[in-house]
Image (cartoon, rainbow, N blue to C red; front, side, top):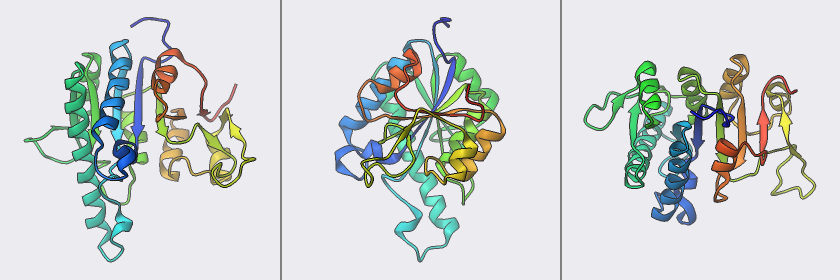
Length: 241
């Protein structure tokens, strides 16, 4: 590992929606190829990359409000597994070895999640995709990203969104919205800024795991953040120096 890199190991969180691309649903072939190429570029530079994918491109609990929440959330967890398998396959096509680990016991499809084994895969240069959320209902993939980031001793959670950081109000509704360069978890929670869910934020805050929010839909931004260390988004950590 070169000492020039800011991070040794990162946990990248991507929503299912970004995989849908312009289609808005399912997996857009060009979108997933683009993100896979970007991840491969980062991994092949020498940085260890773990990934948590959302499943909103296939399923959200609110799609069926009549359903039992546990059943609906279970469907959402399976959606993340579909995304994980597709992303791993695309990474492999791009020449970057990848493996899917899941919180559910699906030995025909993926490795069961074991933190020690995940770290071994990362240290061997493989991209590890953590699918199936936390394995429990009532938790979002944001919480899964925070949890897996802590379990693999990641240096940071990279929250890839469609926005270029955290704002004091919705920039799509307020042209005067201010983007933060840095903000603490406590202030973000007090302001009720919708970056990650409260459980994920609290996990990161209480365990000193910083989060970097950036626009992942802009080509090259992942490399700029993970490898070059450019400040193009918002750093969220409890102590800002």
